[in-house]
Amino acid sequence: MIKLHPKIIALLKRRGIETEEELDEFLSVRPQKTHDPFLLHNMEAGVDLILSAIDRGEKICIYGDYDADGITSTVIMTEILSQLTDQLSYYIPSRFDEGYGLNREAIQKIYDAGIRCLITVDCGSVSTEEVEFAKSLGMDVLVTDHHRVTDRKADCILINPNQPDCSYPNPNLAGCGVAFKFGQALTEAVGLSKHVLNLTLDLVGIGTIADVVPLVGENRTLVKYGLRTINARTRKNLDLLIRKAGLTPGQITTENVAFGIAPNLNAAGRIRHAGLGAELFLSKDPKKAERLADLMIRMNQDRKVIQNQIYEECLEQIQSDYPDDDFLVLEPKRAHEGINGIVAGKIREKEERPTILLTAKEDGYSKGTARSMPGVDLYALLKKEEKLFTQFGGHAQACGFTIPTENTGLLREHLNASYRAILKEHPELRHPAPKAEMVLDENDVTVDFCDQLKLLAPFGQGNEKPVALVSACPEYISRIGQKGQYLRFSANLGNERLSCVAFRHADELERRLSEGGTRNILGYLSVNEWKGRKSPQMEVIDVQSEGEQQK
Image (cartoon, rainbow, N blue to C red; front, side, top):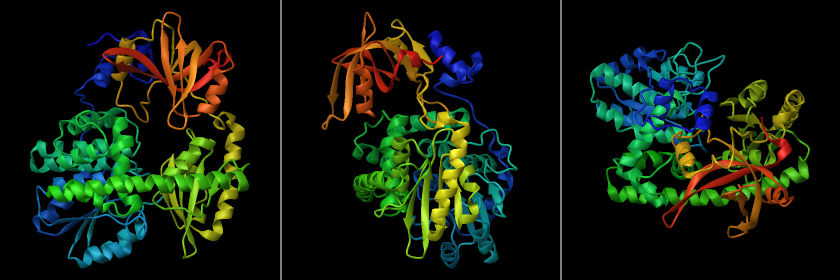
């Protein structure tokens, strides 16, 4: 194995990778960290239920969700079950007409089509009334999901690593990960070829990255093999989407998935209907696949235009109406249910405040999508206000809900009060500064060191790109980009100059750099290759005075 730089070894130890065995597993291109699917609570009962339905020749419907995780979960379950039955269909609800999760109208429609067995993926855990309705019709229901379950859950066979009764070692599986584990259990139970299961790993990788679950342990294993499968280019329709998105087939990274593949999949559900994404992956017709891939690229372009319009309106609303709020609850006139979540994330990032965007409906209700600050459990905050909602669910960092429009003022008041109490106890949350995990000297910043950092990938939540700090004098400061929106400069390290570029907060960073003298420069190191010559480079995220250096 490669001899790692001592500062990288120290970094990994701080992240909990301490023993030689753990280090080997973490760096391995063929990791083994995975768990027995039957450790998931109710897995055996779930497999028995579906195999019995197949034996009876019953029609089975897979009910998914309208985001990238839901789309990939639906396709994974469809492809695996199709090896055992042809009595199979799938249903993905409309974000706009039906909303998240199970709904009675869809269940009735599915029942009327002669279907008596319903499997959910990436949803359903708290759909108590809807599951009861399905059961009242005589349907068997299996819920596979990963969303948090607290005081209520659907009364059916529920496979979810986040339910109280489940002691599965990895509670952080994405919905597609749970679908894959069900497929794994099914494969073991009936002796299916593992090749069928392995062919779905590309979708597992996409859904896991897109849903921003921690990329550690078993999830890291799934993503590593997922990227390997994507880059093997076995799924032609995915390869088609990759090329049309302007990515390089065979060289896909987690960043390419997060910012290239997933947005195009999500755009289907945001602009029109997520079923188009599942249709693309399952289509056997090359011409149809071409049309669908083109359509998804166009929808994503449309999404960007609408997103920018909502974003600008929100900034104006903050300045005019809520400049002093600590928790932003915004109601843009151009609100778009499919796009509000992205805008909420961008507002949260710019304003450094938790953010909710509301879409007022004609029926007297509003739909809300919320994004939190790092270190703030949004789910817990909103859970305290559950009496104001008619529907509510989500994670620590992202939630969604439906609320009577008349309650939105009360929600704003309560959330601001609750968050101010948190800020009083933890004032550092108000303007969280990036923390350096590695303080480097001029001898550390080499091409070899940057290459070693790449071994820590795939990066994501729980295994973020390491933030490095170098102390240097900035030189040759200039603006780049079509509108001069980015910043470029050199960091004089003595014998070497480190090329630096900043894509965010350019105005503020330029002000700090122009103060002169030695600065602490924080960012992500990588290797730049130009005309056959390699050199270290840094994507800068912050510039601090020497007195701010972290210990």
